[in-house]
Image 1 (cartoon, rainbow, N blue to C red):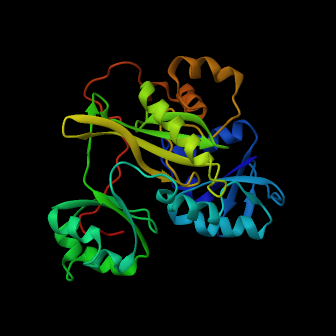
Image 2 (cartoon, rainbow, N blue to C red):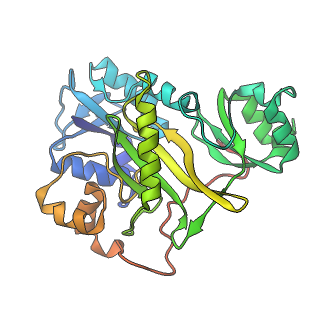
Length: 317
């Protein structure tokens, strides 16, 4: 397996970005390849051109570059771990798993059809959760903006193709923030899981792990669903009860990894003690060895360990 990164991503990355951290580990285990998008060629860790034909490629990139990168890899006869068909199946995950809360999978202007059940929800709620499958935008949005033909959001919805919309739900919190967990599933097996944290040692409650295994076993029944994917779970609160359920499924190529997540199944012996002690993904163990002062263990007050994804109020997708 070769782990492929995009030159443009790495050149512009901050030192704590997960793609750069993963690229450094891929170099260490001699499984690194870099795609130069501008020159449409592949380079090894020494900057020499290489042939990727008939090689299995695990592409790691952002949403902006994945489509072009996949096309280039296929044109060079590389074998993608996750291809376009896989991503389409994952985008339609609610066909394979039904969460407790009501979620609508829509095509563009279906949002505005008054005969639909969703329209009633939009009319009766101030906000709903909106995710654009095409451009990766997700946020709580005002329902008045969905219905206002003069709003920026209305204009964008008319142009987009695929959406997921659900009612606003409450997620429980603790000292680390929202109780959400990202699970990495590889070959239908959960290989690691992490809270949405970037640099602090933590554990995940058994209830999340039990539910994730239950979901993975359910998904495994569908041969047409990809074997490799990301599934996010959260603990929801409804009235006086709480329950753990799916937030969403995501393609593995473009999903962000958190501190205990890893895309690798190759471990370096010298890092095993760090991994055992802190539970970090193996690539983060390597980064910790170089940047020990930027990682934390135990209860640390006054520090926000969550990744921040900025949602523009003007809906600039």
